[in-house]
Image (cartoon, rainbow, N blue to C red; front, side):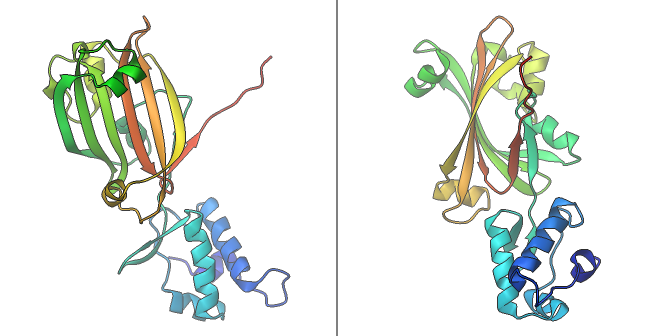
Length: 247
């Protein structure tokens, strides 16, 4: 990798900004301009201090700020890396598999639960399903390449699939083949504190903030065919939406 000083320039002791902020600003700009790519490893703090002729305390303070912003991530025993962030558009109804594949990543899942039962009171409230409605539950940990990206909990009425085993890799592929892929959806995004179990599964840190995305998917005739809750670490996903002024 090209030296960081060649990418962001030297630090100036006479500048109005403290040295750690100059280094922080330079690294932030390099990440935003894609000069440093996701998963790029930064040199050790000792080497950075020598390269920029500053103390290790200055380097540590600069990196700490970028870790807090979610632009960098530290891995015990491995070092500091540019964080992997994925942009998800709220204006397009697509599956996780489609999102990751379109970004050149290899999606796969680890099943946590796959079961058939009846709708719970909480699910009935969220979906409008009548009490006793038979449903499938699909709970899994979703990966992009080797990085855990989300915990997904999905509930579907059983009429939308020929069997519980119809879902292998992509839920939306299975629904499409059965003729029940959602045509529109309502999504709600909110910040949450991840539980200890969620943090462990997503390879996060204790106290990490998370994102919860709730989706209700509908057929063209208005019937709801999907209710899902997906949890993300706040430093792995960016949700974006295109807004247009009304005419």
